[in-house]
Image (cartoon, rainbow, N blue to C red):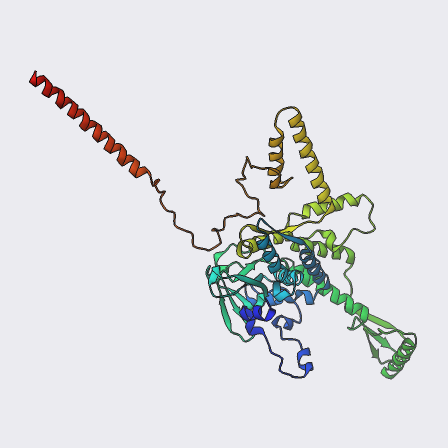
Amino acid sequence: MTDQVLMDKSVTAGDLQDYKGAPVIKYMFPVYNPWSDVKVLPPAPPAFWTPKRDYVLRSTIYHESFWASAIYIAATKMASKSWEVEGDVSLRVKRAHELIDGVDFHGGWASFCLKQIRDFLTTDNGQFFEVIRAGRGGLNSQIIGLAHLDSARCSRTGDPDIPVVYRDRKNVEHEMHDYQVVSLADMPDPGETWNGVGFCAASRAYQQIVKQAAVEGYYYEKITGRSVKNIYFVNAYNEKQIQNALNSAKEEADQKGVVYYMGAVIVPVPGEKPVSVASVPLASLPEGWDRKQELDVTLLAYADAIGLDPQDLQPLTGQPLGTGAQSQVLDDKASGKGLATWPQSMAHALNWWVIPDMTTFLFVEKDLRDRQGEANYTKTEIEAQGIAVEKGITTGQQAMQYLVDKHIYPNEFIPTDMTPETDLSSDEKSDADDETPGAPQPEVQPEAQPAEEGPVIAQKEAADAALMIAQEMDAALKLAEEVRA
């Protein structure tokens, strides 16, 4: 399906602009973004929750480079995760794979994830994406595409049937049904009145972001000399003499290639006293200030807010070799916290609202340590079952059934499944085709009696009646014979 067809059926169709032969330079100017007006981060973000708050939170990456790098690392880490579509019907698996691979008008999964994660981490409103359908048949209409929606243009309504209203570039609002849009928020508020708005990583780390932005700004001005740091009061010289000396020094600095030469104001004090200088510092580092220690605290706060391993932001360099084990332990601990919940939430949303039955979308890890651990586990299970068979505890068929149930071998290895599964893991789906989310379920009909049961009962009753009649006739005949005698 072409991109134009997808866009025409998307709620973002109003955002499209046709090229009408205008000069190319017209399209070089950036589109206005409301959050770009945040010139300086306020000491505290606007009150929770308002759209203006998200404008400020979203702008944090433009004001603090370490925070911007942390968001980039987190986003690329999620966007680069491998994924698979599994299922028993090959055609459904193929179509589901093509749907995911062609998200965002065939922009690709990686680009789609980068946008989604950025909204997820830097806005309390969270991330949104559209489920584009072929027609107006509602939930039964075929899904033909997925597209990212700008969080700043999405308003949560609290209505389960129409959870989101999307506003396009022309300020036209579009009501979106629950089968047309999917939303995720970081740390959603439990209060019903907030309609699922969250408390994102930028909110959690905001004070550190503001402080680090101020520190970096101070260092920039200190190094470049773009602001006055000292005032010098000099007597015995007039202003013209001082200016001539500064010009001479500037010319000499230019010849030596010195670029930055500012940062001091010299005030002449008329008089005939001997030359003396008094300095008044206007900006200086606090006593005992340790920039590295302060940066370490900031990066740790960023890692905790996002849910990253601290070493993702600051690798252990120049440390003893013993920290290798420490790195592995920290990575294992970080695997179940913070940002690790995003893939699970995303997979659940896709499986519930997008992927058809009998197919499952899941993220997969390509880690060699995980593969080594899985190989060791498989070897242990096989050896244990081999010992059980040798000792006569189980048969070969039972051992194979056990290994299939543990997903060590595929189901095709056994002709008949003696222990059908009655449980599903978090990344598995039911195979029932009639359990589509939101689809009307068929009414449960009372169990019908077998068709032949009624005639059988009638025949039995007729036979009993005939026997009774025959017995009565036999008794009557005997009585008649006795009378004759």
